[in-house]
Length: 453
Image: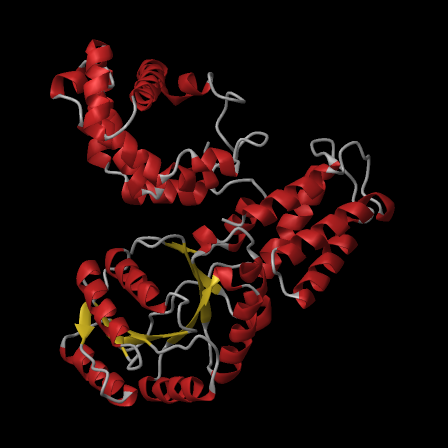
């Protein structure tokens, strides 16, 4: 996520190494690099101009402290200004109103409104313990109505039915009545969109908005849409009283320009960011954490919160008791760890939130640790017998050949998995003997990343 912007900004800051203080002369080339990085990331030109002016003013004459290098000082300035652009505070959904609280989702077709409606419903159900109903007023796309019904069932939300031959105004009135009768806390309205802004769509959105009188009006924007997303954000902001923005498809967006531009253009806070297709792939947008992630500092707090949410405490305690008794970390345990990684979006999603030394947190490393690769490793373990999983040392050449054939892989793939297991087993032994500090002695830096301690 935002790899291009992250790489360019980090490289720009490194160019200041060896300078005793930041001056207009020695930051000139660095500021130009930052400007090019922002323009390449599709950041709106007015935002680029304002951003560059701010960092130049703050950087000139800035003394470099004993504990900081010029590059670190400049990175600190960029971080602070990124937070300013994103909006300093994390703004939660405001649900303090008479139920049902109506959340109105607006945006262009293909931005991900329907999927986001389901993600939002799941979050409200699981995190806030709310009773949620979904309704689609997209009469122009019957498939969208059916898709929302399927997703509502999947996330455990209520669904108010609608048909393509009905008027959107009639649908939303009935859904309000349905949600009141069923004692729902929240009603999420998924509206129609087009591939581009037109008068008919905007007029329809305005009429439906007036009838349902939503407490939250959220603009759904595709992170990969570039300058088109910024234009549509302006148009919707002029028509509707937007209260916030949700960025979708951020996991596929290497640029990050929309994230930097949309808040400045609309003046509305980014509430959530979509990081995948699954219904749990919706993160709260924290401006300071996102700025840290873009600058390669990681986002350890979000990672810890995600682990608490998605990793089974019972399974973790069971494994800890097993290791404490001196039992080995076998291949069944490795499979359980791989399943948990997939549940958290894969190793690549975890690496993105960790601060890494040097260029370790690169796209190449992430590509080798994606969900597809994890599933292949699980398939290899599934091809083993229970005895082979418990005692991996018995796996000889003949067994490797059989396991590889059963998983549809090569013998080299089985060898790689067994080597990975050996490394994990050694690490687990260190943890069981002396805790996580003992394990970290063998890692780069030999200490916890900032924020995790």
